[in-house]
Length: 75
Image (cartoon, rainbow, N blue to C red; front, side, top):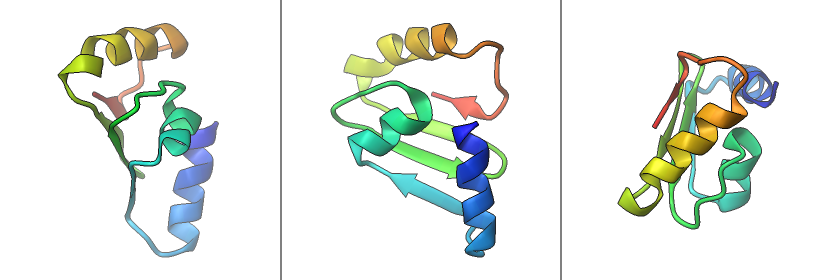
C-alpha cells in the first residue's frame, strides 16, 4: 500500500511526518485530485485538508475508493 511505503520512508529518514500540497502527491496517496489541499502523513494517520468546495466530494470519493474504513485517514 502506498501509505505504508511513505511511512517506511519517513522512518528511514528519521522523520515523524510529511506534509504536501503538491496535487500529484495528494492523488498518489488518496486517489482524490483536489486542485487545492494539504496532506499530512504520519505513522499514525493521514489527514487530508481541503476547502469547503471539495469536502463532501473528497469524503464520498475516499469512502468509495477504500475497501474498508481506515482509522488513519481523516478529512
